[in-house]
Image 1 (spheres, rainbow, N blue to C red):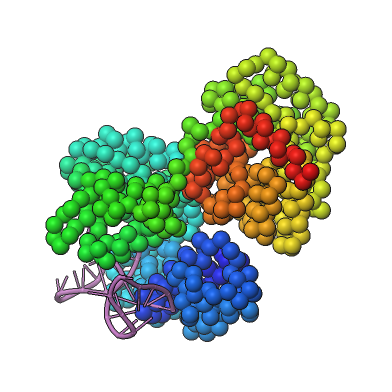
Image 2 (cartoon, rainbow, N blue to C red):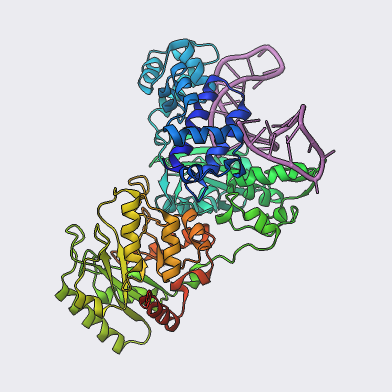
Length: 576
DNA sequence: GCCGTTTTCGGCCCGACTGTTTTCAGTCG
């Protein structure tokens, strides 16, 4: 039982209890516990087995600790099972529908026994919903419409999918009448790997004018709501966009509030209450007197905190660090000196060595590594030894003729099921840099998978473990691995862990990165590009690294060429 | 159900918008 699954049980419990009408604070306690569990480094299963005191964890008290123990022991939670016998679990599918919350779902169920989307659709079409007390024709129409929207399916967009729309909206809004400033806030500003919607904050002398202008955006399909200071539209691709417009004096407070995360903001508001202050999106107030709110710096300063970068605002220790002036100096794109995971048309890439090298130069890199797949993978068109040898000759020629960019002779070597490497010894000897990677057998037992990776980590030829957990966002779960063991072994052998920047991978994730760093692990942020265009993906890896609290010193491809070369040598002398 | 240098009881962030209310509940962020 993974932490994620335990967290899901508490989410389900919270949702069903809320529909049943349970005390909202109790419901929230379960949700907070769920979020806390998702942020944990260590598997709860392991902690329970070791008899550790779970109530030491934030948001976990004695009652929830007992429930976690029950879940780990039996795989189920009897309280939830009993609840399901009173309320059909299928009602949960109705919660994401815009405009439907727990109260109305309960009313629909009590009045018409609606317990599925299909039943809801049928009732709406037959105009039965508008006849229920508390519902009307507009609500019925709204439900019908919401049933066809993407958001109600609970789907999130990859950051890079939202990006072009974010850019287009920013450019569009900059021309809005009376506008002063505009910024995309929310999870997009925090650089999360996926975003549920776009939150935009603007300041203007006449907010209403900006709202009107916003709803006329050409890619808007539908206006969900539009008031004096707020509006919501849905774009052609189903992406929902919320705009909030404030006066210039509230810019900082509004930006802070709409950047979130929710946990971060609530935490600060709780502290505000203790300090006798009130915080809302318009400013910070003592009694009824407004103290500040014009900038984010000022907002944090009024709490005695340093400015916290958006990527860290998750209530995972950043507030304490800001108070102690120990926030990390996060790595920036300018720190990156090169990209250590790249493909050309020799394996499954699209372009030539020359094209990749030229692109690297235009990106300002000092070095790159070409890392073709080793032979065993049919779908990745693994390179044969003679092909690799010719490629390496070509690289050596390049390095002889060019000073501006150094190319490492690399390979992405398949780690076989037993942990051995799928590559010819002769090729191995010519490599400057070897990535070890897993592309098959994702569902081995935790023990076998961990042993498989450990063997590769201890292999003196392997410098970097590429996309260590194998997850694909919204497609494939991370492999079951004992990550602490992997971090410890990586640190001990100076084996680098990759932060793979492919938008669907972003592997390791931010929680794993932050945890691994505590073990002394070093990282490579790499694009894994299969075309020159994809080389720009590296920035998504930087997002992830920043969310994982990484500094320049944690990242080997922020090193100058000479130091990187000696670092790679020290890796291949591991275990000797 | 969690939490605690004012507390082991009594709090729990705060506000906008909509529809169906006849003064506000529900939903959302």
